[in-house]
Image (tube, rainbow, N blue to C red; front, side, top):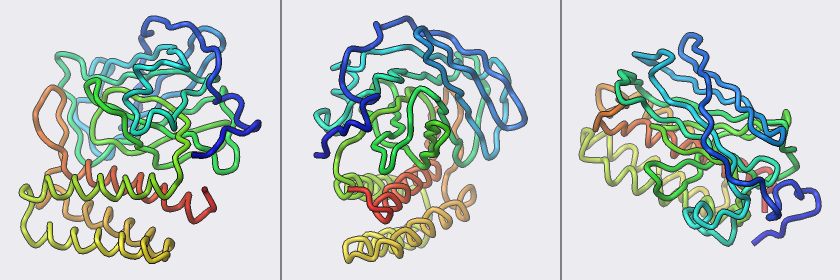
Length: 278
């Protein structure tokens, strides 16, 4: 496990902001996007954005947005991480964001939507361990990071649905992360193969197996391309051959969204390795 360096003091485990009640956020709608300002005590601020590929029923009452300060040493939150001892919550931005459909929401979207949190309370460093994590229904958190951009930190990623979002420092070795993401994407494909034509599932399996073999052989750049091609193929087959709709307060499984989100965050971690992440 990597040590927290002096350059990463803002994300070290230390005294945290006291817990606060969830603060409702005011959504601003523009086309297929939602934005909201996060402003919490202690000068903790961020911009939240949600962008949809295709959406129906998007209005100011479709989603309930909120944010709250949490303890940077919150044992309950950390216990929901893949390896609690390898995670910390940034002391500079200990914020849990919730995005939930309202009780009467008629919102639905196809494909993926992209969630992004942009804050000046954190500073991006080389090979930063900061990641955007998500959880559904109070369950385990998983890495959804598809991008990590400066200014000062803009963490974003694709999602097939909504619930809790949290920026954390993930100090696991990148190879451990990549292996877990390959396993997760394989499990998603295996579990949902019956929902698509046999030939489509077989093609995706071949693509995913090839990507893993390339990675294990050390051909990381080729593995990145292969994972990207896997996601592109899922998108191409979406709708007609792969279920791709999420509906608020419904039971539809957005299989394409699950697969594309998994491929997106796997590609991010592979790219981190190719850029020298330990």
